[in-house]
Image 1: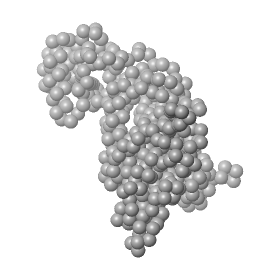
Image 2: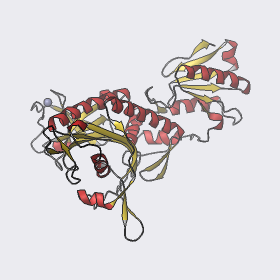
Image 3: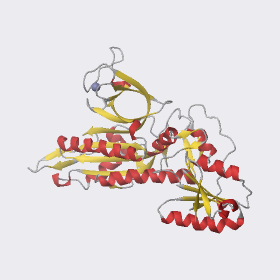
Length: 407
Ligand SMILES: [Zn+2]
């Protein structure tokens, strides 16, 4: 239970003007976030509650698919990046240390996970293996955008799978698509999120897959086939000769604006090769290890959810990630005990309560009701002398009429 009488974070009277999206202004007004610098944010209590819930949904689904959670280091030495030829990438931070030595603030973890796992995967008996982590990543973005979409510091779920052969990899990769679809169904954005074919020419002639959520303001155009609903990123559409579906060769399509939240891609042997990671097959022959990589930009996803559910006066969170389910407003000192008792009763039924007991701070009903809406809490409860006259409290569900519930 979160009691607002001692809660240090305050809301703003009006919504700060943010030019390119709706939700960042609301998140600032609600006190959920504050900017440290462009593309770098502090998260306060309620935003953190949302984040933890998203993380846990991701965690549950990854664990169910047999992936094992680990936590890798944030810093790494130059030599592992030299091995893969990625030390000089401009968007990756170099951190100077003593002398002329440099470390890296990790933007991704292939260079760390491959040497780590090479100790544990040696033979066909170890295939497949998949590890994941949820960790802060750093990118030296030249132009970080306002809002939380393109950050210099962001939270990421990154998973890496290791396989003896291609057919096993393909099966695992296809299964991961279903895992991802379940995750965004649980997060309430499933019906508007499309698995989208994207170019992955850097490593392979195969496609990679992006997960794009339709949002009117951002960021990519996706081309959805009208006949078989396969979605395509702009990169894989031949813009000069017009759209041809890679699934069914149809030319009929719809373009939607969307925001990328996730991607998964085949790494083949791109990273296992430089580190010399091999597995022994059943005939005791050494085989190169095939890898897959599966990302979810957790902080980006959180922003997409906020934008997707953003309304004029607050964010109408889906139940699965809302910072709380009930917001109890108490209007006078004498009724605080009753509010506490009710909060405990509601929480014993696995719900989560914010108790607005700001009496001594002299916060009136209007502001309390406004904050409830701004925080995006679906069930507003009022305990007042008036409701107690009727032996109960007033409950108003989002979009519904208030009703008296007898206590
Ligand atoms: Zn098609």
